[in-house]
Image (tube, rainbow, N blue to C red; front, side, top):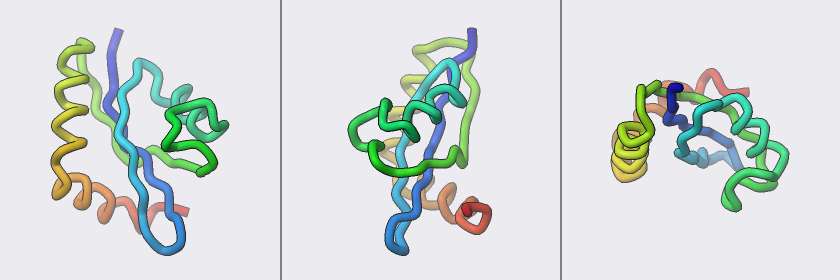
Length: 87
């Protein structure tokens, strides 16, 4: 089984809001976020997956998720690269 670290993006009043998470099924998890059944922070917004990375084990995925949550420069770079594709 693979695990994925993903980044969601939501444009809210001309600024980008991002969310980082991990899952073994990112498409199913995105559906939960968009139907207000995901994390409390994501409720009431419409999200799009703009980045995901696959890992062979949960521990590696969790370590990378933690790193990505703390690395604001990398998050900003990912958001800027995907902002023009967001609709």
